[in-house]
Image (tube, rainbow, N blue to C red; front, side, top):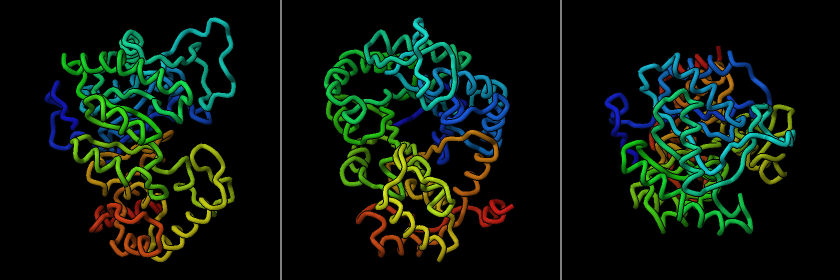
Length: 356
């Protein structure tokens, strides 16, 4: 379990705030944003009590780390916030000028990503991240995008490189007190179970697999983490957008990084109908649902602006009645046996604040 220990500033009872800050949009995810927008988003997070920020070298090929480091230096100079980054995708100079224009990150830093989970690459990646982050302390380090879905036939090769090299580097840094916690940052829970059978981890960042729409991680992964005392952070709570925009906006709803199919759209529409009956925003339900699971300590949507951050704070605080979750279960829209909130929480004023 993640228990920060290097700094009194972060040694507090609740290590990670329930709402965290996913920094991928600071790397120009899907669209370009300005340095000012990035700075204001981080400023709003700090002002709003968000105390956990997650980033990775891959996000904008170093741009997100640079922007986050610059903003936190201004708005959190005492380093009270907890910071995580990732290893396994090492940035190297684009000597051939062949950086793909098809990247989902619309930024150009002269660097290109290379998968490398070896000991030396992980150590080099952390040092490079520290420089981009302005020398700020890194509390949590995740191994990024391991798994069969990510690597296909090369999964065994890259898993071996990590367990024999990269994991050893992370464990050494943890033992030396240079970082507080280690884990995986992935889109597939199966690989988390695979590594937990072979090594010691503190925390897992799982994106998209435990959400209001999909609970495939509930059967074995979450109980295993609870048994082992491993914390879980939920990324991608909107499943690439469909749980934020819904099915009625007129735009193309995305699920799992691609246009949603008819079955997914139909399920979200059914959830929306129950949201309407209880006056619950779909996005509020999407943010609050994962937090009911015992090992889940934080949910981290991505933010590209102060307005998005402020809206998320209101959504997490929206008072959702227990009857809403009960109706979802009765309709078969939440998998049997999963944890649901057993009492409304939040600030009644959040509803008015969101509508302003």
